[in-house]
Amino acid sequence: MNGFEFIETTLTGNTAVIELNRPRQLNSLNRKMVSEIITAMEKFDREEDIRAIVLTGRGRSFSAGADIDEMMGDDPISLELLNQFADWDRFSLIKKPIIGAVKGFVLGGGFELALCCDILIAASGTEFSFPEAGLGVMPGAGGTQRLTKLVGRTKALEWLWTGERISAETALKHGVINKIVAPELLMEETMKFANRLATQPPLSLRLIKDSVNKAVDYPLYEGMQYERKNFYLLFASQDQKEGMKAFVEKRKPDYTGK
Ligand code: DAK
Figure (cartoon, rainbow, N blue to C red):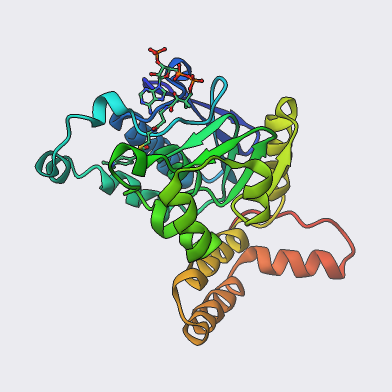
């Protein structure tokens, strides 16, 4: 897709790749970049042929957080008027799988952006941290909420209060990331994972994501009622018929996403 200043987008088969492209500033996130990322993501989310979205960063790091030069002059009124969190809220509405391929530093807003991904694959040596407290602020784009839901209150407070660097191994141990790979294999392994998802019926993936997201917020019984509606809905799809017919006929299914 053309016309972006701070990201690059490419298509490989059924996977769209969004690459943060401010490597000299370690992909620190300015406002325009965040707006470009979500704009591209929403476009790919609507395109029928795209089955997965990969988010990565050019250069040695995924992202060193919000652009401090841009942010340092902010005040509560400018923040309220800019309403930039509205852009961040839109990440929660993306329905297709988002796979983050991260490396180097994943800090602050960069960590919050990574936590908006559904699956995270990290190069060995990747370091995660929320350094906000050390700057006199705190994460405000979902960091305290998403991290706590992932790792629990105890670890979240430790990491958020101290801003300590969390190794890829520790992140894996606490369920923050899915996998660690050698740096030179990061994109290859990520694309392999994305291609695997591309062979699955997209409506199933979509409603599984929707149901799993509800599990994070809903009590068990309400979550199970919600899950059941999505389960019923899939029986209205052509892919349910195709999947089960192909099984009975002992052949590979040909999914259309309908
Ligand atoms: N902002 C601006 N520039 C940055 C940057 C950042 N966050 N991080 C790195 N850079 C720039 C450096 O200034 C340097 O630029 P030059 O001096 O070459 O011009 C270049 O990137 C390379 O960085 P270093 O020379 O420092 O490289 P090192 O390997 O020595 O160190 C480092 C890498 C990542 C440890 C270090 O650069 C660093 O500590 N960076 C800052 C990390 C940080 O504190 N990040 C911000 C956290 S606060 C919001 C939404 C979200 C947020 C806020 C608001 N709204 C919706 C309103 C999120 C807030 C945060 O992320």
